[in-house]
Length: 256
Image 1 (tube, rainbow, N blue to C red):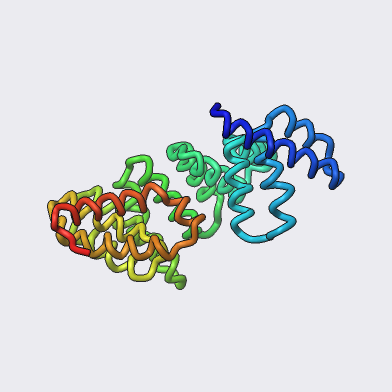
Image 2 (cartoon, rainbow, N blue to C red):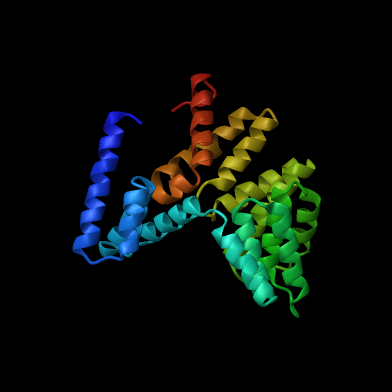
């Protein structure tokens, strides 16, 4: 570890230890800070110090991200235990959600299917989740069947989420005209830039680089407006759009 970084970690450890003692925090925290100077101090800052200054979404997101880093399988284990205790549709969905967060698409699909089988009525949000994990696992045909069979919802945002997934499934099936039309349509309403990035990616695959400029420029514009937490959550997507647009500009296909 470089000397400067080590010094910062030591100073943070001391500051956290002092704060812990002065504010009467649990002795367990002091043990964690002393044994794990880096990660333990970071956990203390996020869990004990930041909430006293802000109760905002950013703090909650940071706490969730840290918890995932420290114990990435904790939510999956807890959800599995809940299913063992009470095998209900609700618990199956929670279990599937946790598996999906870990990108365990195949097992998540199994759990969503179990949940749907226990329901008396159709559950559109869960069916959309099942379609997503089927798509992520590579089974675009099953995802498409699920999505095309869904009745329309009264909620526009829910319809748009389903349409975005359907556009992806159509693109995988080779139905590029319909996929591009759906990407463009839902991109006008959905926040973020996933629809624009997927539209541009498909256009580039089809050799239509000049047409990809407009959605990439829209993605660039939206990237400047999203908050830093949303930007960080989709960093790979926004970075890809920026690199691709820069390349097109360098080659004279897109002009600033």
